[in-house]
Image 1 (spheres, rainbow, N blue to C red):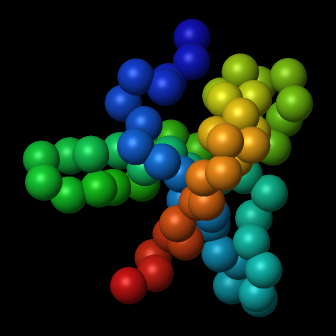
Image 2: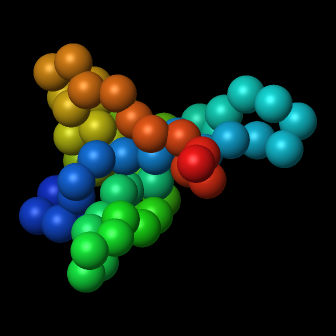
Length: 68
């Protein structure tokens, strides 16, 4: 079952040695703040990954996890 009902965006996950992980994390609202939620693996068969790709195609840009 997709997890889209509580997603407000996505986070790219930075690697310690630079660049970004292949997976992303959901951006979920908790109270008045946003927090990282589920990890979505880079898997074309994964419905949540497909939803993320659609979100990107609509012109959206993920935030960077941990960026201030």
